[in-house]
Image: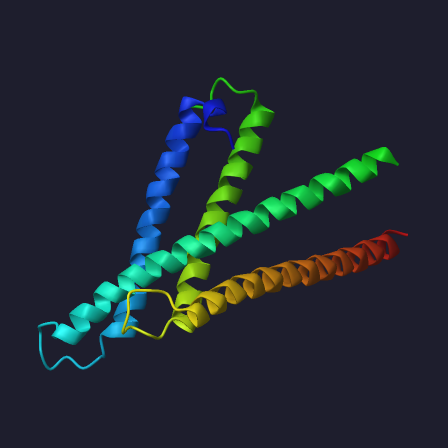
Length: 94
Length: 94
C-alpha cells in the first residue's frame, strides 16, 4: 500500500485506526501480564520485586511476540494475494 | 471522514474495505493475546526463547487455518440452507 497514493481522509483514517488498535493491544497486554505475573492473592497492596521484574519482562516479550506475529501475518497475506492474482490470471487466460 | 466528493459506489467500497481492514487488525491483536498466553511461560528473561517463538508462529498458522476452515464450512452450510429454502419455496408456489 503506497503511502503516496492515500488521500488526506484515508491517512487520517489509517492513523485513527492505528491508535485504536494500539489501545486495544495495550489493554490485552495488561490483562495478559496480570494473569502471568500477579497471583490473585491480595494480602499486600505493593508489587513485590519479583512481580515488578516479571511485569518488565512480560511487556518486553509481549511486544516482541506482537511484532513477530505481525511480520508473519504480513508475509502470509502477501502470499495469499500472490496466489489469488495467479488464479485470476489463469481464469482470465482461459 | 469526508467522503462526500466520492461517487456512491466508491464510498460503499471504501466503507467495506475499511471495516474489513479494521476486522483484520482486531484479529491480529486477538491472535497475539491468545498465542502469548498459550506459548510464553518463561519470565526469567526478557528474550523470547526459541520454543516460545516457534510455538507462537505455529499458533498463528493454526489459527489462520482454523478460521479458513470454519468460514468454508459455514459457507457450505449457508449454501445448503439456501438451496433447501429455495426448493421449499418453489414447491409451495407451484
